[in-house]
Length: 478
Image (tube, rainbow, N blue to C red; front, side):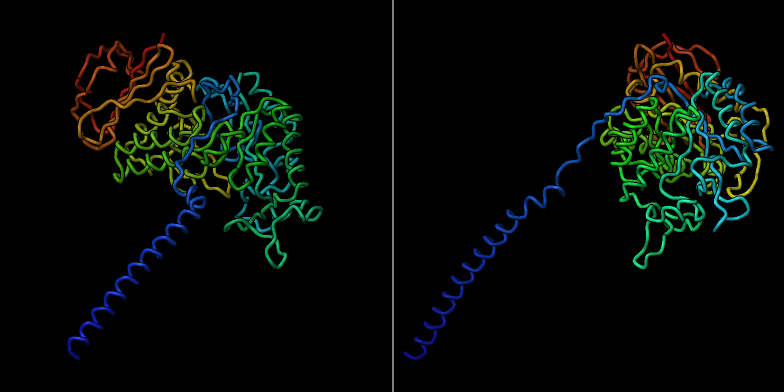
């Protein structure tokens, strides 16, 4: 009896514990579900699909088929002056470029200057010009000449920071960021400059007023804004409205954030594609990544965005190397790619001369100008961009459609079409000969090849052989 009773009690105890455990588990699940449900509003931002922004920016009509040319006044000529560059504008007109992005022209700070001549992006006076480049009248003369030739002048603008000896440091110290000890601070390791504080409304007024001054006094056509994403976007949204009241401006952001296209900027950099081209040239990525990249662009940028495409600029040339260093024998191939994918084409001074040397950034270091086949090469690419609707900028141009060439990821073939005009491009992005079949029939037609001038007929499933890094650009113009 005692033994039987003992086991009975144990059984009862186990049954009660089991029931209680079930109850506890149920309560735990109920509470957890309640917490999850009550937190749902906090989880929404995490799981909510990205919504593609819509742009309110209306691009100037002249920008639809424009090509940008970046000029470094200091290094462009032995003289390094506005007047010397002005004399060369007819040559650039012949090349076909029509938007001249002028690197900063302001006096450069002396305090905390880096190396002998300092950085163009360390501004000592927002209303002045660097005396080594010439006078304000020389600058205005250069801009007038651009306009006479049908070109537009875009001034490089530095809104995020000034030099340490800018007069604003003394007259308006409240315009600048400070640390917890009240000391003015530099952004990152840019020790030659001090950062502005855009929470100050008076700084905003000042910056907008000096930008308006340049539009009114020198008749420039817009601004290329340095590290634009480091300045609050609400400033840019207001600035675009106010600047457009002076004249219809063209705005380039040295940034890649899609939201900058919503109300403020015509152009941002396609840095990701630039680095992707470098990676493909160095064997780290392949042609499939190009298709993925532009699918991503289409998913997050407003439909009429201009993304700047380039193989070199002042930063890349001086710090990462020339296109020949980064892309080797494929430099021309990637120039063709950058000129024919969606976006606005940009080239850096000297590229049309095949200049293959890094320019020193803080010292005088002139470009060596030599006549070679690169002038004609770029001239043909630019001419096609300006005359064929398929390559127009933004929504005016045609969508890029890839043509399958099989499993090999070393070839990229695509076409773009708009208003009955078409461009069909095939590129060998490798060091090997490629024998390929262009699948389908979407590219069928009678084309002219841009560089050879030959007329060719393409039927469905055409075959082609390409040498290492060889490119073909076919087009149909109405």
